[in-house]
Structure formats: structure tokens, C-alpha cells
Length: 91
Image 1: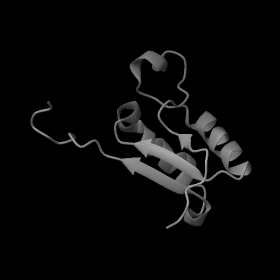
Image 2: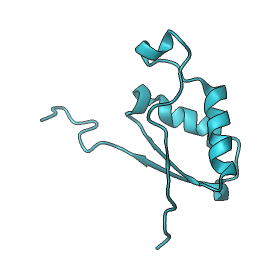
Image 3: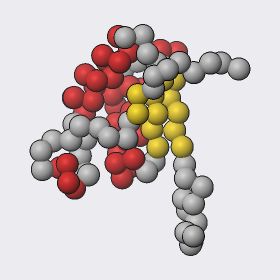
Image 4: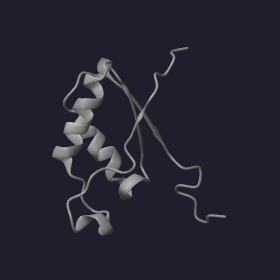
């Protein structure tokens, strides 16, 4: 079993341009890229995303800022799906 290094970069609360902060519609990709670059430069490799973060934009941002720019062997990416996702009724 591969040991996951600490700390991890959580992609839940990513930077957003001014008025978009309250609407949770747009992630500042350029700033996110800079953050990802700095994290990887510090020899950290573990990123965490989920489909529910930022109304689904977290995984898109991970694709643009991380997966499209770095070889897959350079990082680890964890993502999750809530157990209730897709259910007709949430308890």
C-alpha cells in the first residue's frame, strides 16, 4: 500500500474573482495554477477534490490547473462522491 504524503491540497475553497465569491460560479484559474505550482514546488503531491466542491467546479479546476499541466506520475488526486448523490430522496 502506498503511503499518502501530508499535507494535502484541498480544492474545496479555491480563489474566485470579486463578485463571483458569493455566487460560487467562477474559479480564478490563473491564481489556482499559481497555488498548485507552489504546492508541487514544495515537494507535496496530494490533492483532494470532490464533485460537490464549488458546485462541481473543483474537479474542473483540478483538470485545468493540475492534470492538464503536469504528468500524472507527479501528483496524487483523490476525489469523492457523496453516498447520497443521485439518490431520489436524501435522508
